Length: 72
Image 1 (spheres, rainbow, N blue to C red):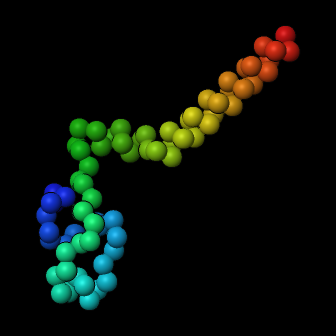
Image 2 (cartoon, helix red, strand yellow; image 1 turned 90 degrees about the vertical axis):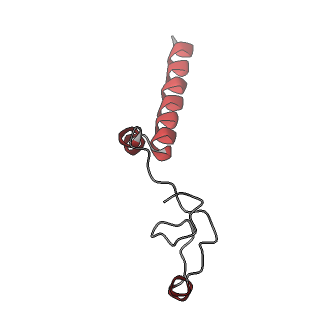
């Protein structure tokens, strides 16, 4: 399903009520995109949350390194 499709999908950013779905009301927001098969495996491994966690760990390591170099 493409973002321009007006058909109801089971994956919409904002859920519809059952009344709206039965009446065929189009989704108020664009339908979510299907995963890209070429990058799907990587996308599942690297999520925005894991990237933020990695950045936090990196900052902590850099802070500790700076402290250790300052003490030495």
